[in-house]
Amino acid sequence: MKKIVLRIADVIARFETGIMFTSYGFAFILGWELWISILACLGAMFGDDPNWYFQFSIIYWIKNVL
Image (cartoon, rainbow, N blue to C red; front, side):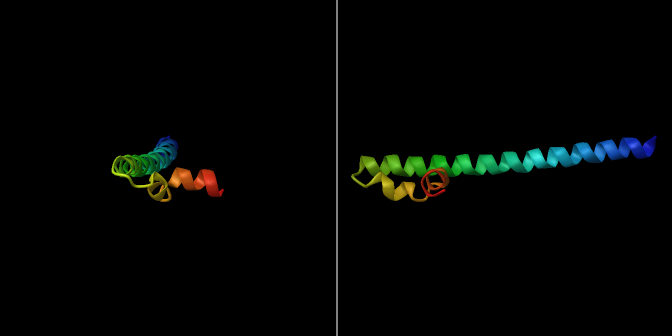
């Protein structure tokens, strides 16, 4: 019985670890995109071309390159 409970706990822990790493990845991408968007807006306010900033965007790259 003890082995079954430990095995179930191990499966749950692996599942939780996968969710954690996935959520950290999404949080990193969203934080990066927010930072690029802020820089693009500030650049546009002061006369820069926003596309210069968007070249560093992960989502923009995926949308236009892949």
